[in-house]
Image 1 (tube, rainbow over the protein chains, first blue to last red):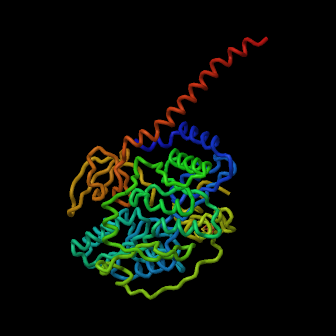
Image 2 (cartoon, chains in turn cyan, blue):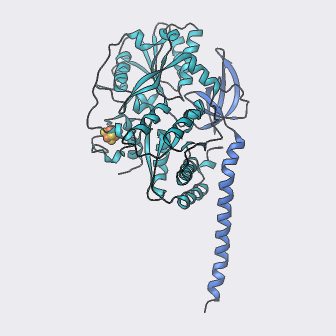
Length: 361
Length: 95
Ligand code: SF4
């Protein structure tokens, strides 16, 4: 496929790898923030081809993984109600809540539907005026424009039976929280290409400057990831800390303006809890007052659920790049993709699932 | 959720007042909303995420990214070839 195969060319990958080996003189720790990149790295064994002492650690960039348990439980409570069609991206269905998952709700007779776009959920609302259609709006800045437009459109069409259960999270505040943590070992970052496609990369410039860390906006194919790693190492070796763009065929510095504009009109920034990490100030989005009628949490009046995480699971530390999945005693034993104990084993973008799938032990 | 693959815009149309497109991913044709890429033309490549095109692929930049590494890889290959060709010669000359 055009613009895909070229960026998987082993010849080019090998050349970049040689260059990484040539320029690396010291030990460095680099975090890839995005779960999609984690997956590609483990799939192609990129981490094992790097010079010894050049370590890749996996970041929190898996929206499914960081959706708090309380919210999964709320989703389950809403989806279990009669007269509700609950629409969600497929990978949310098997995320364990404190009692069960959405898949179980579906098998118990709940009307849970898998959709690919929030516009599919909107169509369900149009076609089922006697039902309440609730869309589970999870995801980073990449998915926020699509849910923003769905709500905007629902308002325009005066659809009264369309609701969002919003759990959108923002990447730069999370990176800031990780960089500031006393346990942080990461010296450079690969920023997630598609988050930057929407938001641009100007938000990262103050982080790079304030904390002296190189940040390179990076794509998802092996050639992209290797080139991103090379660009970070080159900066580290020279003692530089800039934001650079490896993924120039897709990402522009200012990002996608129309998408940012609609996100700003529909949502406002709020504090948000990240599963496994905890509360991060100003790290999420919620619907603005004008769109409150579409807010499922307000409409269904769910009481504040307080739930505890199972304590065997170390996915919080995995998500912060402090531990690797194989350090978890449950990995591959009690915890597998068919019997997941934590969200990082459920999502295709979760680090535990990637390690399991590609037989890392 | 985040692994968007570039697809080629086959057709642009309107639905419920929204700009939509048929996108070809090497034979798999799917629908995406084009509201966020108002400048897009039929034949261009877009990155689609959750049913929405979020960027038009810049073909010139794609070429530039690959060019340097291609040149280096080709140069290395030629060197390799030369070595292979000269190597047996030197061996034969040895007593
Ligand atoms: S292997 Fe399972 S239990 Fe262990 S950290 Fe990963 S998701 Fe949690």
